[in-house]
Image (cartoon, rainbow, N blue to C red; front, side, top):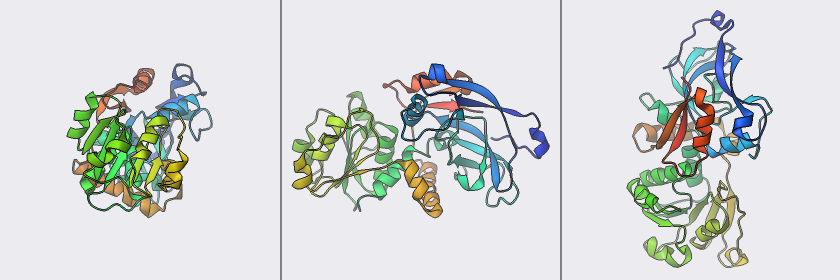
Length: 340
């Protein structure tokens, strides 16, 4: 799948195509497709021929200059993707040319990356590389949300809004595989049957009063754990569904509205409100914890448990069309860049 480059001399004058952000603002004014010099790997590095990369909401926020952490400009952008190792630097072990890997670094919207070998995670042999390209962010966020905040027992319920998002779908699939049940909130009626078919145990619309309905929806229980990616009234609705001493974790702000939590939920329900950002987790987590997380996700991917729908795939030369498509609300899956 990758392009093997057997010696350093191959790089003399070799250029690669990359999506470059020159300033923050509308994509049409700030994003360009450029040719940039390639370089061979130094000791301890690998070169990865990139194959696919998705466009995530975080990427759009970076382009607009509205994300929690922004790169120095100009910069090659992109938060995740998958490719094949095409060249190994001196001293690299445990990896081979042709291995499919996930770069754990920024700048994936490019034909080629040369990065430290410690910054790539292998994908199991036989895993679909297109699906693997969407493994780094959303499924990993879902895995950590399900494991880092509340000890869940078999049969426990989780409640979440934005259940049709990439993270939401991953929560449904992972929870199902691990014996937990999900109550899922969506905005559009056509998503109800779709998410039920994908493994969601209950799917309701935003106008459902969860405080009044949750016990009947969840077979007499209240969820101990809730996930919020919207904010505003939607977050409060999810918080009202939680059991006493439950936890609401916010990891997104699609509605761009703050959380407005009544004092009573803190005083009388003793709820906990937490936040999660995958980038911070990766910065703080031990290397073996990061690898074990992605090994578990790779196993679920290979077994067909994890699957992310793709709405449309664009070549990097149609970058602006791809970003425009990714910014639309009503899609049936991810927008992918084909970087081959």
